[in-house]
Image (cartoon, rainbow, N blue to C red; front, top):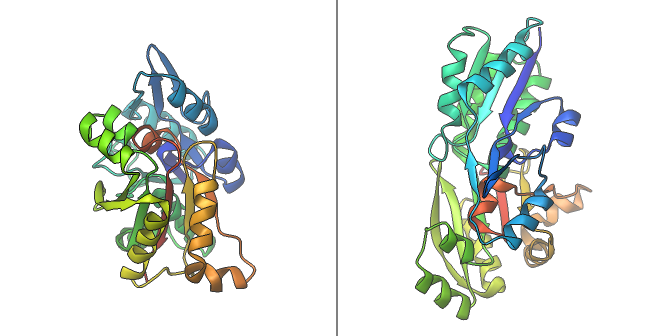
Length: 285
């Protein structure tokens, strides 16, 4: 009897990656106007940003329903396997609630974990789960471990523009215009499952410095556990500049011959922060 991992596409694990990792990703739905797309199935990350840039209409994302979760649970448990379902933060979506409602009919077969995170923060918890499965832990042992370890995950991001926060009604048009004129880069994080503002930086150089300060504030990165860097949009130039500016943080990791894991951010968070943003998710020591 195997342990199967199920998650949602807010983790930004693509269908191709999921196939290689041996996990299942349920697509959320993103809607532009009257047209809906399954995240990562009908519309990949690149296509999403093309539409985001081209349209004036703010897209909407829809959570996974209990009925959809039930269908996946049935398929994944039909051979006697158990399911470890890891969802995006319950404070950002109803997916966790839907997953739990569906799990009521699968007692002893499904465990649901609220990652209290999203995108690469959610991803690194899933990567830890895969590692624990590989070590032969039981599903209950893994669930207990993940509940403890998720407290040490930090997800921080530097935005390139205030425009999409304005479109989403998070800030006023006046604030967005002033920020654009002053080249202000917002710094955000996921804390206790919610996205919060940590401050503003003038220009990308100061923004990168701010990210470095935040990493050091948490006593650095635990490189023995999963970590991930990510970017939004079509270009990773901002991320490459951040890595260049932050060599002191990653120097020992790179010297070991390891490549920094770099991914793209999809529609769930990309809708609100737009292209040109960079993010870092890591476990604190």
